[in-house]
Image (tube, rainbow, N blue to C red; front, side, top):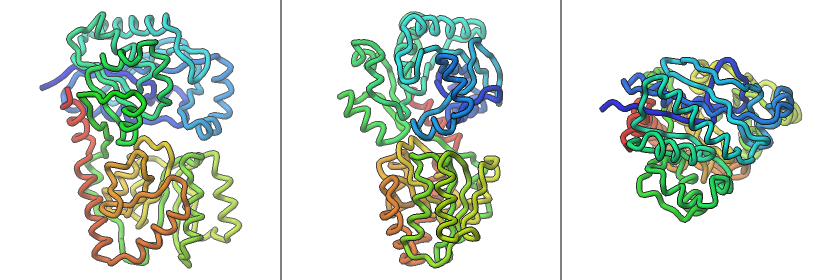
Length: 402
């Protein structure tokens, strides 16, 4: 059954604005729903602050993104902008607050709701589903949209990584407000546990809102070669503090591999730390820094590796882990982070304490001591996990909850 979906988010890609540490995850859902024949409107509630902060962000966006683990909206914008991307109709509506991590003034939230309603009317659109990514500032917006304008819509909030203390920005009765939302989605099992522990509320209707990978990843022939020793590694991601990119180098030094190959795909504020380690250890031939590459090129780096490693902290979800798993790469992620619940330690990959190079070294050693049959079984299990989490499948599962 086709649905009319109003999708709200504080993070959304666009070609005309600069946002560091941005993600296209919400757009992937919208794009897939359009392909499946659903009607979709997207409202990007674009965070706008005092103008001087955006000016600073133009020059220090990578540093800010790394230090505070947040997206950084460098582009200052006052006017609404409508555009279409990959068949998805989007309206970017600036939403002002003086400083990041402060509350949005109530009058501006009410004005934002009215603008969203006008956008819907302009498109002759009465939503059956109103789903928002990030609980703040969306709880009040979603509840008011249903209460005052679209009473027959099913509402949903998808929880990404946010400071749960921000729930107190909603209103004094925020515990009542969260119960007014019909369905809750969680980007990972740890986020679900944190939310329920903090609020004392277990939503009766809830689901795990995992991302998916393009189906074409499952048809690749250039799969990873797991012939031992496992000494070809790849890291794909930003060089920011919470991702601990340099810890992989320290683990490789500790685990005792005499030679190895490591490809770093990415860049960021911690690049100098990585470069200093490479020079100190004399690894210029074994470690290559490729910088950011086009997304379509990432699989070629994974296929040349045997082990994908990223032991990030505060990682909500990472598509690149799934991409690596789909190609049979032995994948190491962080325990109690976004991939827990998808990666089972020792079954379809491995889990390590975030940022712990000593445990990572032990895991790399363990992998190289494993029986070939057991290692290939983990690789095969990883591929089967990825097959269940394609873009099409996760998009269908998302809407099935309504």
